[in-house]
Length: 128
Image 1 (tube, rainbow, N blue to C red):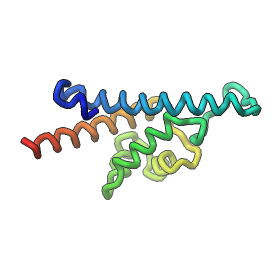
Image 2 (image 1 turned 180 degrees about the horizontal axis):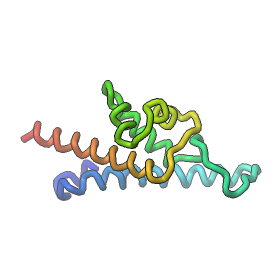
Image 3 (image 1 turned 90 degrees about the horizontal axis):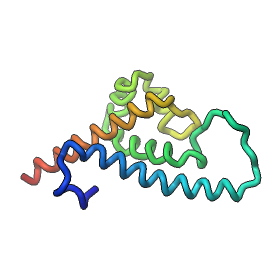
């Protein structure tokens, strides 16, 4: 992201942050797929995914969300934004096997991108 900061319009910074997350996730997903091929255990189709070693994209997103939720009240703010109790948000982010549905996952990505963009704009104003 740093190498693009001077040539990309500020409206696209959030999108670039999400793309960077997807890039990290793609590498992790390919590694997980390689490990899964080595395993002899067959999983049945249609089973609900649980967070863990087989969900590298979710693990990266949860890590990024946890990084943004360090300040007091940030996790509660995120839970309100997504429309869930904060205890449920904690279950998602703690890696206890719970995962949100697709719509809430997209909302989490949107929240993360807006937080990252606010941080980038705040850092840009300090240097001006």
